Length: 399
Image (cartoon, rainbow, N blue to C red; front, side, top):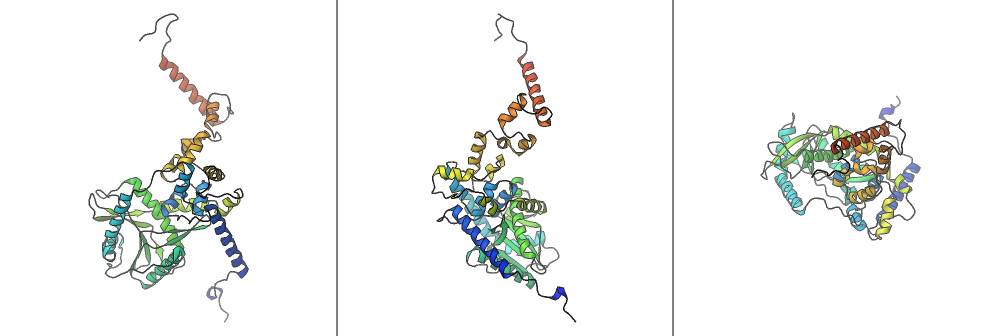
């Protein structure tokens, strides 16, 4: 009896194709190193930055800089537009202390909270495997994490992975992500655990901070799904465990956050990102973002890559102040917000908008131009009524 196709060995990639792919990967890494600067170490791309990148997929500038590992904070300082935002040292230390408290004693308290919120039909976690995830470099740690996830899933018990390393391809370049923890359930389910230091008061936390944590967790879920796809019996849960201090104490409490919506949005936005090699290929010869270069050279390099500025960038990107200054100097309507930009259609500058409203330019049949002229007429009428009747000629105005 001949062997069925399903039971045969998996198809192998031709050696020539593998060699060509390896050459392309090596060439891309060399090109990104040139853009970053020969003596500059790559700046890691974390889940928070990745979520912000996915929220603005049209910004080729950020996609290239993040993909090349450019330190945007140092670049913004060298350009003369430093971004004064980020986590304070006090908040950083407080967050580390709270995370250590949650994970103390082999994660006993963490596993208790998880079992209370997401235990399902599994038995209580009396014995929890905590695998060693140490390895050389991010690639080694990512491979060790994938192996630990497969082994824990095959064992059919509880396992706690403390700070695992996950890999996710972003615009053709690998990004390495480090969640606070991932728990493997006896039924093969994987749950992302996100530990934050902001308080949960009366079982409710700040909506904006919870939303940011959900978007960040959605990135981890996407990265885990790549491993689960090649792991028998594994399934990534779309409900993550958010652990925060309870009320005004330092005692941990937890809430379950469904990230299916954030996962779908992030996945769609990452798919829309232009591949990094295509952006790099369009740059002028000799372009570099090395902070050691002069401000003039850096400005020319940054401006050679198109950006998609919006006011929301001020809370998510270190180059936002530089991009805002350029948008304002050019009179770009993007500086007024995405919703305004969308309403104005083909009118891309404030000058064009004012000219269209005044009836000096624009096609009257264009709905946008017609709406602007109608708004201008209503404004002029309102101002005329507010001014009231003019004083009689030669008379004395009232004071």
